Image (cartoon, rainbow, N blue to C red):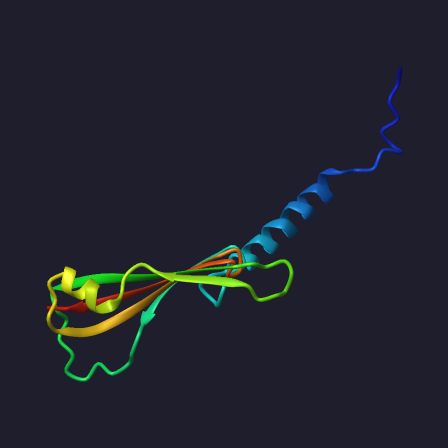
Length: 123
């Protein structure tokens, strides 16, 4: 049985183009450096901007806040829970002087799950 290759559509070029389009879409969806990515974002930023004569400190502690939201019905149903309060976390770390704080934000699936971590530094 002979195969007629002249009437067969060429899929080699279109498969490569489809792969390129998928890679481009994935890179845009996961671009956590330029805003919030749709799949995964992790950003650490200063909690305040007043750093005039602020010492660095040698101790640090973390306070986590987790949030889960329901994305399907549009009812804006979400749950937020915090692991510890700031004073308790600082006391547990042995800190008496708090100098500055950073906020770390982790977002998965465009904010369906979000974790915010307050990173406190002091002595």
